[in-house]
Length: 224
Image (tube, rainbow, N blue to C red; front, side, top):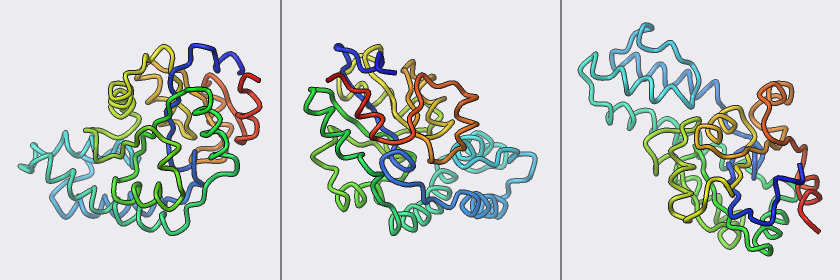
């Protein structure tokens, strides 16, 4: 695990919910509400085989022309639902113990830090301010900044581009299977901190480059 924090590490890109803060999003309720909204728009079960919040949007947008709907209208409708659940989670988010200390340690080492989240920009911006993370992050990207949510690599690729960071010298830190897949799709090594969106046993089966249970372990893995 320590080998991930090499002398030539340029950037660590973080997920937000479940990674920097505890996981509070009501996933199943959000998906059910989106499916009902899409049914009202004319989608059928044939169009909507996917029931995962992170990939439901892209599937619905791809199917939209089949029923005469603009993909952007679908994106807007789903985004409006997700915005409500973002704001709900915002009322309960708390920083994971040690997360600010880890961010500060990285910045002391000269390593850039970025945030790539499936949370919408409005709630994410409020959370960053309320939790005092502005000075600990070089940049933050929400789902509104990219075409597709993770597991798409869009957000990670954009963050690397904006920071001018080399993907071979960057790491993604997340908590979910979507984070693992997004990092791999972007060609990055990926570390997972457990007790987030997905169960530890599922994370282990996905074989990320490293697994940590808390930020104290992450801090302990940094070079002395």
